[in-house]
Amino acid sequence: MKRLLLIGAAAALLALAVFPALAQDASRFGPITARIVERGSLICGVNSVLPGFGFPNDAGEFEGFDVDICRAVAAAILGDANAVTYRPITAAERPTVLQSGEVDMISRNTTWTLSRDTEWGATFGPTTFYDGQGVMVYADSGITSLEDLEGGIICTNAGTTTELNITDGMSSRGLAFELQTFENFDGVMAAFRAGGCDAVTSDISGLISRRSAEPDPGALVILDVVLSKEPLGPLSPQSDPQFADIIAWTVYGLIQAEEFGITSANVNDFLDSDNPAIRRFLGVGGDPTGTLLGLANDFMVTVISQVGNYGEIFERNLTPLGVQRGINALWTDGGLLYSPPFR
Image (cartoon, rainbow, N blue to C red; front, side, top):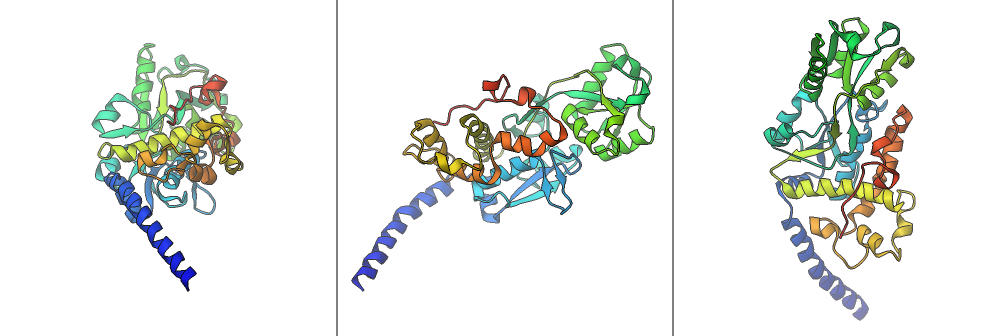
């Protein structure tokens, strides 16, 4: 009996020690983070027509590179990568759903631009995929350059940077053309197949994705031209800087994990690492990491265990489509991916 009483007393003391810490963490939550925790799920705006980035599989479950970014943020905050409610949105809907609060964040091949950063009231997270705008045509069309499209019809999504970029690209070359836009890329591709467009334009990764879904991918070619810089990444409302910080450092964590060689398969092997930088990154040392964000100190252990590192996410979703790492490689491999220090 005395032993049970001692155990109970110890548990009570432990509870008193733990609960204030938890309350202190919760007090650091911004309004969106608090809403996510209370709801028990993250609402994430995603693409639903772009294989490899955002697309429902045969079971109706969303999957893709951008979808996995949503899952990583859910794992960081809620400890469960599956605690996500996906809201399919078109390109034109993005500012509306962000400003109205219909979504907590967007992870849907969205280019970071000055006007969007300001007029949308958005906070962009780190770039997760560096891309550029391209043009796709049928191989048997004889079109090999933008000059061959003079007087032609080029189709793309409405409400995207591609409209302005293709207009700039053609006008700077003195080429006249007709631009037709559609609500989503399904409409673009339908018009293209029906002969209503001489070419389609979008991010090169998106063109690769859509080509892979066609009955005869070999019938389509992407021209050797890059019209723009397209830094793609997640975004959230400016109303919650703390939530924006969680998104940012979760993404940085995916990149840093790959640099350290930490994967979903071996993350537990690193928990007793002698490397202080790794211990700090995983939140298993005495230094604060996740607690600085109001999260569990070892939040990246949960994220990596459930979602993997950046390289795993890329290989799972984009490598099967033939997308190369290229400039989306780590900085140590000559790419642009680089994480600030976790300290």
